[in-house]
Length: 503
Image (tube, rainbow, N blue to C red; front, side, top):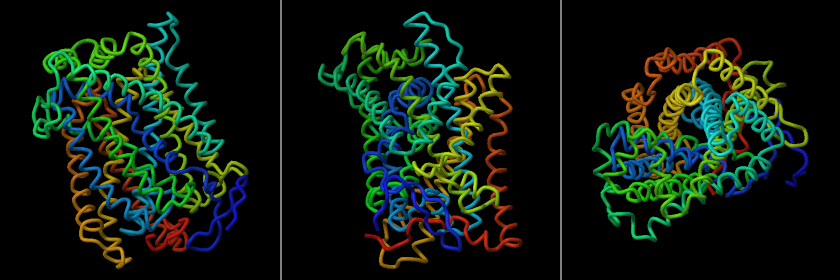
């Protein structure tokens, strides 16, 4: 069917009525990959997580933690992508779980995913604002309050979503490309100079070392945390070209490509300092020196200055990607009329850009309210806004990932016998689901340590209860719809672009 690129047409649901559809064919394979990798924020994951993993987690075994996490997430992705070959929905987890475990579990998971992505954006705004204020003060002497940068990022994110995924894609390609380049320059330079002061050592990539150190569980959790958002590939299915092929490829590229990059960069950072010295530097008052030292020594001081600026743009790219995720989940729930008033508000798309523009504005308001609350209580944008909301969102999304694995397993037990496979549709989702539950336990057991100075925060203590409340709300409301409005209940998680056989 020919599609007018300037206008997004309506799409049929599985029930009666029509919904406003996102703009089709707006993004290709690389665009989806960039959108997903941007949510992982490589430069933030490396400079923010690795020093903490080395100092308080599994020490020099941090790169090995990334290796273990990559294998586990690749196994999870095998089942996830098997589902994506049959179901294309911007609701992603919401649609997958609805088809696999039923509408009630689907709505609960959809609300949890929406909740997670909604709090991830203000979390990233917190770290973006911290990087921006610090870098400008250090390099220019300007002392600008963090909330000014928060307002700037809110405006950029809202604008990007308004004009559609293709605009956001172009901006993210530039931002992501530059941050990956500077990290790669440091790592490659260390490798070309023989691997640092003690040469190449392979202890950091020995998988056994992932389970050693001060707190191996904490190190492993931070490794998994560094991938949060990779699963967002599926939500761009309705806007991508040939989603049955693009989404599975983009997901595996995001997992394996990011994984290899994380392992290599963190390994070179450690041996670039020297194994013993790396632990000391990571535990010092300036843990970022774990990356800055080898960058300055092997690349040059200019690269350190550039890296500081790219930490700003990298967190901007990550926050923008999460804003897109939250807006699309809100739109997915809205277009099905989960609440009747939502269908003609957040369930609408822009008549020209085919973007979830109203959902994007709602997400901007949600982020602004959360940021205002932290500002009004004089909370630090990095230690409180970023850390606490990131932990909250991570717990929610990890639970959804685990549930999705079991949904894949059940779905293929009931549907598509021609696609059943002992590993792809049974073993992989089973192992992936169990592994994701184990990661949730790692988070719960290490939550206070991960929160650092905010370990006594009321929000941190309430985190498991807030996640449970969101899930319970979804379950309760789905049961209400089942009894009082069965026609709306029937639509939960069932608005898809197509549900067809694997190509």
